Structures are given as C-alpha cells and as structure tokens.
Length: 379
Image 1 (cartoon, rainbow, N blue to C red):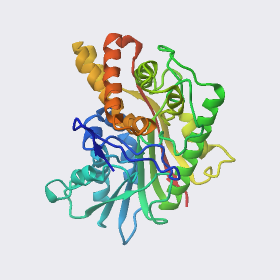
Image 2: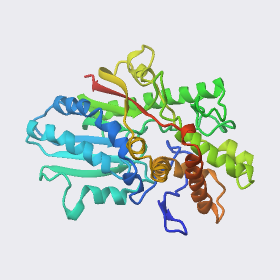
Image 3: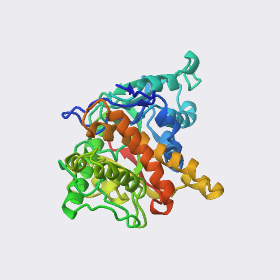
Image 4: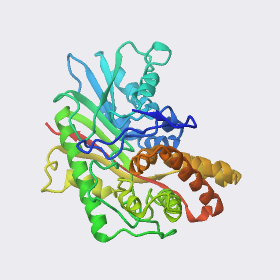
C-alpha cells in the first residue's frame, strides 16, 4: 500500500503488521527506489560471475518448468536485470519453459514491478519460453512449493531483520552504531549482541525455507550489504540520518521517547556471519548446502565518484540523501506519531539531512561493502 503526501511525492506509508516477518513495509515506491538504486546494482554487478556459475549448474530435468526466484525484488529494475542475465545462460541449456518469480513484502510496489516485467504489454525477457509471476510475502517464510525452485537469489535484502530484537535503541538509530568518523551516539555491547543474534537467526530461517523450495542440486546466491575489518556500509548514511532526526528532537517536534523507540532494523554482517550457519556444526542449516563460493568486497558508489570528479556539492547531497531515503523512509514514517503533519515532517528531516551534509561533507564519508555466497542444495 502506498500513499501520496501533500506535495505529491510518492511514499510507502503502509503500517507494519506486528505478527509478520517484516520490520519495514518495503522501499519507497512509484519508481523512487528504482531511480535511486544504481549503487545497489553495482553491488550486484560485482557478483554476476557467481550468478553465471549458478545458472550454468542448476540441475536439468526432462519435463515440467524450470523456476528462478528472486527474493526482495522491490520495484524490479535490478531484479529484472538479474533474471535477464541468468536466462542468457539458462535458455540454451534446456528446451523447457522457464518461470521467473519476483518476491517481496505484500506492501511492496508491485504495480511498478509488473510494468517492469511487461513493458508495452509484452514480456521484458523477449522469449516465448519465459513466463513471470510475483509473490507477496516475507523471504523468511516458505513462498514456493517443495522442490520447485532451481535457482534462487537475493540481493541487498537479507540485512533487513525479521524482528526488532529490542524495544528501543536510545543511543542511536541503527544497531551497528555510529561511525568512528562521526561518533555521535552509542550502542552497547549487549544491544549489538542482540542484533547479531537476530541476524544469525534470520540467515538460518532464510536458508531453511529456501532448502525446502529448492530441488536437489538447486543453486542459491545470497548477497547483501555488510562490513569488513576496514569499513561498514552503515557508516555515513545513518550518521547523517541520525543527526537530522536529532535536530527535530532538539526542537521538540520529535520527543525523546519516540527517538528511543525509532531505529532502522538493518544489520551489517561480516562474511563469517553470513556463512557460519552453513559451515559451523550445531546449526540446523549446517547440512543442507555445499558452500561453493564466498567473498566480501567493496564497490564504487556512483554519486561519490561523481562528486570526486566535479565537486558539485548540491548534486552530491541530493543524490546521497535520495539514495538512503529510498530504503529508510518507510521505517522512519511508521516510527513517528500518525498526525496529519507526519509526512511533512519526514520531508523536512530529509531536507535537513541535505543541509547538514552540505555544511560538512567530510563528517559523512560513505563506502559500500558487501558479502556474498553461492550454495548448492544437497540431495
């Protein structure tokens, strides 16, 4: 479900179901996420060789349908590009029909997704053997029948936690804590441990339901924003949003209790945290997959690179804030009291973020780190 504010800017204002496996209602819709997800595509592009390997190795069969499923598709621009790449390898391997399944939360902007899948009334994939569908649901639940998926993918999505492990995070708005550069805020060791445990449980839940959906020998590619010993993807962007929100706490427009309860339930994993449920004995998922490939890496951020070239601070600040607004707005909006002026307040928070960034861009350096693994479902 989406809505429009008084200024006509599209936003996702659907309310979170406390019983669902979701802590956000999804990305900002009506094309906003698609328009501001070039950085996410760069992170996907870096692991396309893994996708090629998966598309070359899923098991073939004599009859039926070959199914590829992408979990966390959002509005679909990147999801469609991923499937198109996989189909380049898959179509010559089999004469069977292929189905692409694009999944996200029920509150996702599926209207834009469908337009991306069938522009001009025809399949975007350009083959009469390829059929597409969408499924609304949490990636932490089983969404396809047992042994029906040959290749499953998820990109830039599994870092969004299925549960809020603590009721409040009074010192900062993101569980990995503030960056060393900014240092404005705090997250305790106990709070960090609670989020790390929730993140581990989420990986296990995701792997368990995908194991039921995948055919024996089926391929699973998991990629998500993360952290290394050098840096974290949360640094900079959440420092800036935190500072912007605190400005309205200081004026009294957001009370301290709301600030304490509000946080972005997004966790930045290191590679070992992603792979441990597959590799380490004692996990329910330890015997379900073979780990074929795994890596952590950093990619170039387009708006950062452009700023280095031209020094255009206004354009940089706008692109920087649009980038993180696309995936933080829904949670921020739902965290504020549902007053008539809420949408206007949200707009002013992001406008304030642009002002803060332009005043001192060196306080908010941003780097994009990611982790990824390719798995094969054991028989």
